[in-house]
Image (cartoon, rainbow, N blue to C red; front, side, top):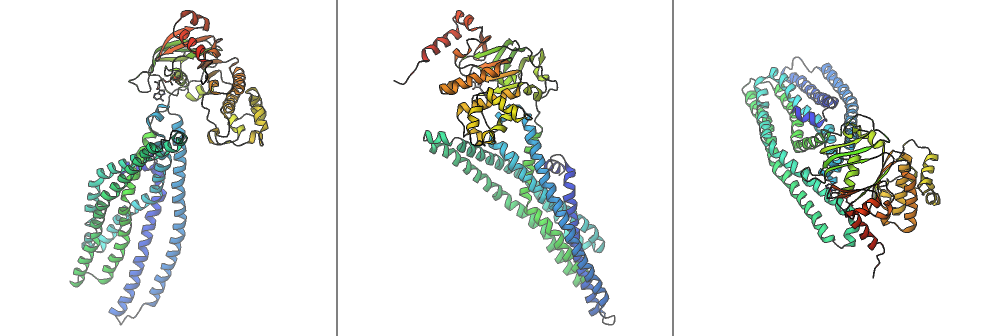
Amino acid sequence: MNRYFYNISGGNTRSLLPSSVAALLDGIAKIVPAALLVDIFNTIYRAFAEPETGLNIGRLWTVSVVLLVWLAVEYAAYTSLYDKTYKAAYSLAASGRLSLAEHIRHLSLGFFGRRDPGDITNLLLGDYGQVEHTISHNVPQLISAIMLPVLALGGLLFLDWRMALAMFVAIPFGALLLWLTDSVQARLSENHVKAKNEAASRLQEYLAGIREIKAHNIGGKRFERLRQSFDHLKRASISLEGIMGPMIMGAMLLTRSGMTLMIFAGSYLLVGGTLSLPVFLLFLLVGTKVFEPLTVVLMNYGEMRYSAYSAQRIMDVQQEQPLQGTEAARPHAPIEFDRVTFGYDADKPVLKELSFRIEPNTITALVGPSGSGKSTVTRLLARFWDVQEGEIRIGGRDIKAMDPASLLEDISMVFQDVYLFQDTIGNNIRIGKMDATQQEIEEAARRACCHEFISRLPQGYDTPIGEGGSTLSGGEKQRISIARALLKNASIVLLDEATASLDPENESAVQQAINELVDGKTVILIAHRLKTIQHADQIIVLEQGQLVEKGTHTELLDKQGLYARLWSLQQNTDGWRVK
Ligand SMILES: Nc1ncnc2c1ncn2[C@@H]1O[C@H](COP(=O)(O)OP(=O)(O)OP(=O)(O)O)[C@@H](O)[C@H]1O
């Protein structure tokens, strides 16, 4: 139980206190009117049983006024506590979501490789929603359902221990039945969450790939995967409800049978003359108030158990170790790869014993067949992943000792497929330096050859762009991403050459922008077209994750190895045309 509360509250059990106290007070408050009603009944009953004393009108008035005042106080207290309870739950979920999103940002990209995007979305929205609902609704009910019988039992035992025993004797058996079903419920919840994540991922994949699905007319196949995932979700939902329903109903009937037992015992004792009618009535009224929250909790038990699994998933991610390191980055320093071995899957190395050195403020080009590990080299330098063996050093210091945020501050990256946020063009450039002035943004845009086309847009720098930059051409997006990098002014530039897919006009603009960007920087360039790197200070040739050649363009041509072969291949294909 402790573990349950600990998980649900994300380790902050105290946050559950206000809503639980509120629920308990509410439960007690509901018993008081019942006791007052019994007092009214008792006063009237006595007037008939002892006609010589007459009806005590004064007491009736007093109790009625107390009842009215009590109801008004209960209403005021309940409204305020209700407000606090819900605000606390929603605030906890909102801050929890944000801190988890922030935590995820500090994890290595390997984490994202292990989980589907649908799974992560579900974690932040679905699982937190589930926990939020449990904190605001189920936990208060649970506390009230546990505490009320305990308090009532204490009081009722003094009044009549036989009736109290009859009323509560079945509760432990109901609890035992629930406890026995716990592992089944946990397994079914886990299956259901997995099916839900799978369906969300398939749906995301289907929507993201809709262009390819239409272009290749593969709707049927992809739709089949989507249909299967929804079918699986349907079966998991039916199992969850269908198997757990009868078990929970059984526990509920067992628990509630205490009320029937108590009525039997009460009738027997009343007839035997060892129980007074007002006491019997009090047991009946208190009994309904005590069993009410118990019934509600049992009805919601499945949901609560389910959210325990959601909370566990959230805590598992919270416990994922972020990248370590505290030292500041070292700008304009030599970069060394020292016998670096790395694989996305630890058993399948993508880079093997890779060693090379890059001098500050020089241009190094990475060349090699597709899949040889060029992008992986740049990702490791930016610590998207940490190496498994060997070291990457900047300025003689292992980058594992460096604060990942500080390291990224000193690295500008220009990818082939640029992602722009659904915001204005100006704000998309500002990502390079969040406190940049408008003048700095325009200066960077000018140097990146995009000021002209931005100025032609109706709202200039304030023009909103669609998600992913869908309203701009490939070349325009490239130049905006270069403007970002220029604004950032980091000493290391990682560049994935993208000009191959651009038209000649855009290509020359992007080329000009790149020349501005690389000036006075340590540049690592992933080169797809070898003619663009003829003047690089150093060319590193990779094949299957290993360094096979290193040198300048002329040195490598003289070697007559892989580079020379790739060069002659590209020379021949440069002039290709459709026959
Ligand atoms: N996130 C990833 N998870 C698992 N494997 C990956 C991942 N990224 C790349 N790989 C694999 O690692 C190997 C090297 O990939 P990498 O992208 O570094 O090659 P590359 O030389 O840049 O290729 P290209 O020129 O086609 O972009 C490939 O076999 C690729 O399939």
